[in-house]
Each structure stands twice: as structure tokens, then as C-alpha cells.
Image (cartoon, rainbow, N blue to C red; front, side, top):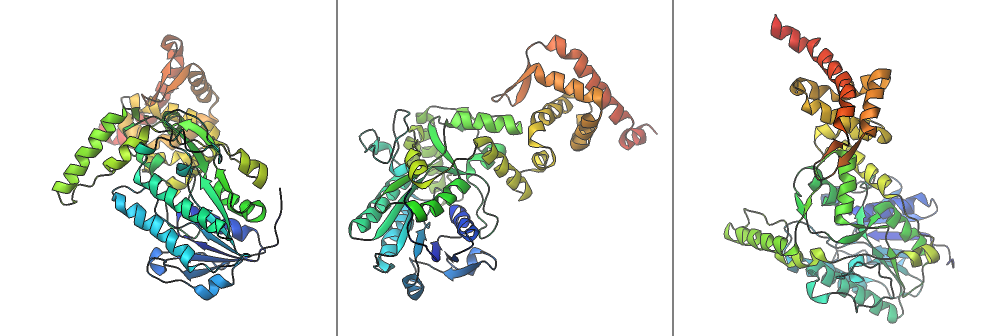
Length: 444
């Protein structure tokens, strides 16, 4: 890895976003830099704390701190519009291509100013066959006709950035994968992507299956610091993580939460549904929202996979285990109130014991006194943890079962051999109910 000169001042444009907030945090952790956070102002609800200097930057409105830009060593461009439900296709061009053009128009021409430009893995990938592409793969395998408006806009943005590099600017292009993980601890109100919350709240009953590169947003943010110090100008770096089918990701999410995994459907079905909801939205003058515009449907069956080997080799990029990323994201979703109360066990129960809790939850929901017992689930689990017989029964049931993601429940290999353990827990449930104040009041 090559190391450049020491940088002292960095401005992050788009600091109020999901990725931008994490990038600000990572630069603050360096401890030897002045960090400036650029957002569109107080209306964004941004609070970066004393370690960061907030700056109002609204490129499309012409609000640009030119004097500040002239004194920067590094400028991170992390602004733009990611996929958002209900956004019309034309908005992706204006909020990404127009923003990128304006950014480079306002940027001082200085060979000593390093620009870290945020692109996307969608500018590299989008193939009909599952394959991990690299920065040098070319586009011969990309299915251009099925790319969505966001893909097309980001591709044009990247072209502009690399063109500026050819004109003498020190530009490093970074291509993050599909970002998951918790939101930044400060500096943004942006929630994690819809991938998990929609599935966990029943808003995503089906998917079109294809492979994506899932990347921990914290890994990607650290990649910007690595790119500042070790990146080569005019180069692209894929900041990825784990290549998984959507179905594989949701199966893992189901096993961690007990929620039924979304079912896969053919791409033409999604296209037809998107077309119908677009029509309903048009006829109702927007009263009925269309979550996925029909122009995005054809790309859902494409694979967006990238190989991070170059970033690992040249930048020192690292990848967090997927289970840790998802667990951290789930716990923050619970703490922030983005998930219903029955997911509180994700914060109350140790992660290694989530399967045991989910199995107990299933047994309680099957019990004839479930209405009374369900609100006491955490207390019931605490009792199982400290009682030898109850804990042994729960462990035995877990060992003789498997979790079925598309049923959202455990199934037993041999239910007959599990009956005695179920009976032990059933007696415990009966005892709790019949000794409860609720029951005693009902028989007085």
C-alpha cells in the first residue's frame, strides 16, 4: 500500500445521509483532522457534536462555501438520492447527475485536493448470470436494457467523475455494495435501508431472487479513510462484503427474528404488480402510493455482485461478518422504535440465545393460554435460563428441530421424541397461568 501526504482538513458533502454520517464518524476517529460536515442546513435535523464543524451545502440551490472548499485537503462527495419508495424516475437524474455536475463546477481546480467520490456497485454490475465483477471487468456481461433509472444515473455520475480525473483532478472513485448495518451514532436521522424493516413488519411478502453484494456501512465508511491515505487517483475501488441471493439474506434474517421469509416470485409478476400500482397512483392523483415504479422492476432479477479484492489489497479494506452486521442493525432498529415491541428480545436476550427464545415464543403462541402468557415472554425465558429442567427441555427441543424460514417456525424431525420436553414446558406454562392474578381474579 502506498501512503500519501498527511491530510488535515476534510469536508464530507452529504453528511446527513446514511453513509455520510458514518463517514463523518470515521474521520473524527482519526483524531488528527478537522472534520467539516456539509448538509442542507438545520432542516435536516443534523447534530454532529463538538468534534465536527457543520456547514450548509446545497449544490442545486447554489449554496456553496467556496472559501472553505479552497482550504480543504480532502472533499468527500456522498450526496445524492438512493432508491426511495415512490420517487419518480426523473428525480434520480436531477438529484444525482445534476448534483455531480454542479459539484465539480464549484470545486476548486487544485492538484493537491483529493476527492473521494461516491459511486455505486450498480455502475459495475447488473448481469443475468451470477458472477462477481471487478473494477476492470468491462460491461460486456451487463444487461444494459434492464438497468433501472438509478443505475443509469449513477453510471453517468461516475463517467463525469472519471472525466474530471482525466482533466487533472485527484479523484478516487469508490463503489459501495448494497449497504446494511446500523445508522450512524450521530450526525444523521437516516434509518438503515428498507431491506430489513419491510420484511420484519410484513411489508415485503415476496421478492424476485437475485444475488447482491451486501456491505456493512461501517466497513464502507472506513474504506473512505483508507482510500484517502492509500487510494490511487483515477482508480475505482469496490467496497463490498458478502455475495448472497436475496432469499439467502432473508432466510438468515428469518432465523434471527422468527419472521416468515418473503417468498420468491418471477420477475414478470413483480413487473405486472408495479405497473398496476403505478396506474392506481396516477388515477388517485398520488393518494395511493406506488412503492416500486415499474421502471425498476426489470432490474430486480439482475445480479449486482462485486469483488473487493483490489480494495483489500491496495487500501487495507476489511469485511465484518454478516451475522454481526445484521444483529447490530436489528438491535438499533429496536432501540430506535422502528420495529414493533415484540422484537424487544433482540436487545434483552444475548444473541447466542435468540434461537432458544424464538422456540419458547413459538411454544407459548401454541399454548391455550397464549393471550395471557405472550406479554410475559421475557420473564418466562428468564425463568427457563435459571431453572435446570426448563433449560434442558428447551435445549433438547432445539437440538431435535430445525427452523423453516418460509414457515417462520421450528419443525421437529421426530415430534414423538420431543413430547416429554414439550410436556415439561407445558406444565410450566400452566403453572404460570393458573397462579397468575389474572386467573385468580377470574375464578373469584
